[in-house]
Amino acid sequence: MLNSVLDQANLKKLEALDNKKVMANLEMAIKLCKPAKVTVITDSSEDIAYLRNLAIENGEERKLKMKGHTIHFDGMQDQARDKANTRYLLEEEVNWGMDVNYIMKDKGLPEVLGFLDGAMVGKEMLVTFFALGPQNSDFTIGAMQITDSSYVVHSETLLYRAGYEHFKSILKGSDDFFFFLHSAGELDERNNTKNIDKRRIYIDLAENTVYTVNNQYAGNSVGLKKLAFRLAIKKAHTEGWLAEHMFVMGVHGKPGRITYFAGAFPSACGKTSTAMIPGQTIVGDDIAYLKKVDGKIMSVNVEQGVFGIIKDVNEAGDPEIWKALTTPGEVIFSNVLINDGTPYWSGMGIETPKEGENYSGEWFEGKKDKNGKEILLAHNNSRYTIRISELENADVLANAPEGVDTKGLVFGGRDSDTTVPVVEALDWAHGVMIGATIESETTSATLGAEGVRVFNPMANLDFIAIPLGDYIKNYLDFQNGVDEETKVYGTNYFLKDDNGKWCNGMLDKKIWMLWADGRVNGEYDAIKSPVGYLPKYEDLKNLFKANLDKDYSEKEYNQQFSIRVDKYLAKMDRMIAIYSKVKMPAEFTAQLENQVRRLKEAREKYGSVITPDKF
Ligand code: SPV
Ligand code: MN
Image 1 (tube, rainbow, N blue to C red):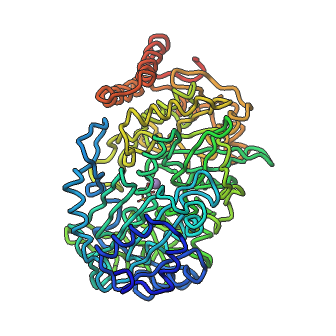
Image 2: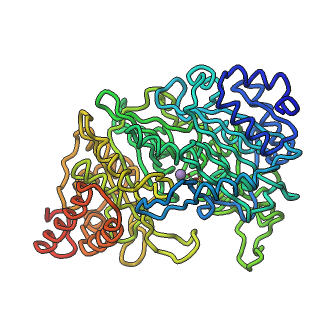
Image 3: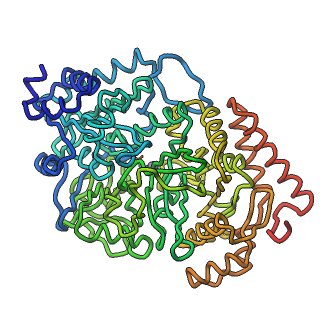
């Protein structure tokens, strides 16, 4: 059976791994998907070059004018993660304390296997191996991906570290790795998935296996991203570490000093742009593993690339990314506008053409979809895929096997009228509560009403693959045995004034991060308020002047850092309504109650809007 589709050279590459589970996975996939041909991709430059060419040859990507740049289009209905059809395969009913999309395995597994049956007839199957984490690192988890999409594997070679050698040496004979089987399914004349109604992304937590079919958008098809992340959260909980939806960055507060932070923000709340703040260095922008080692919290970037939202990337706001996107180098653009071999997107800060080709086919300004809705030149979720090593701000320890010594965590939401731009948690447990009460307001870019607050604990709600109470308990316990208590910050870049105008500019996040950096390094005093430690005006004034050459007024400070007690209490009411239905650790429930108590006591003393100088 194997021999008819797998030639000797490819078979030898597999046999060198000496791994029964790898062979069993492959045999299962071949029998099920029935490919015409099977190609095994190792870490060698010839194999990677083969892949890159294949993506061009079969039309999944096209070359652009700039050397190394390519464009990939996903279908009209395949532009974002499909939450509705992403389900866990479980063997019993569960109550995890949050909305969990799951299906009984005896029903779901035959369904998804049915869609994968014969899905690769006439197509080439690619068998690939990646490392989730740095090479030769105790953090790293092996991942085997089988797919019929060369775009998926090409993306993975940019986004993840090569793993064939990891399987060969470190994982020799082991079945402790993640497995992903993907097929784009039947394709239409534009090389896009035809049967979107049969799109399924099913996650078998017990087997560390994910099946995904009839999709191409990377968030659904690139198994190593959010699909592996869900498996990792379960594994982390079992083993007592953290798998988080976090960037990792080095903050350069003083010449020669780098202090590492990890931060979680819901999608479109400024996570990538925080990791890319000019003057700082990036380790990773999306997924981190955090472990306690010798009394320190060490973090690694699970990835080595960025799958970033391209909308609003321009030279002024994101100079590092801009440079990578406008100079030769390996870049995959997806779902942007192409005109004369050049990519264009919204918010790029230069004039864009009125016609070209985008994910909808031939495009012209004013084009409407079949529901009469205007099709923009580029989808709001259009993206770029690059290696971090292409960036000038890559951190020197970005690939360190031991990770980086992480001194602070940051949790950011999107909130127009309640929380302050930056606050330091009173202690670790309070910080866990700040993370667990993140809300993100919907914007005009998402479907439905604007300004609706969406609860998103640790920006991880979509990915928590265990009961919410267990996840939070693991977080609380994580600080046990750490030498120096890790500081935790809450940020909010989206505060508006009474006239609905943004209070802060795009670059102000640099000041909040530098203040946090100074706090971690013992440089600033702070004001103890009911919601945590607030910056002092003088310190922010100096930071604004020194870094942005901006005169930050006391009026702005008072407006931004006043505690709006009634709004905070309303937020706590929303949180208590959610968490009262969830089995939570008593320590966490006490945090919620104490937060309410402190706010009410302050209101009695000082009224419902309190400037920082009162505390
Ligand atoms: C996110 O939405 O958080 C992303 C992009 O990082 S996706 O790969 O779609 O998850
Ligand atoms: Mn993400």
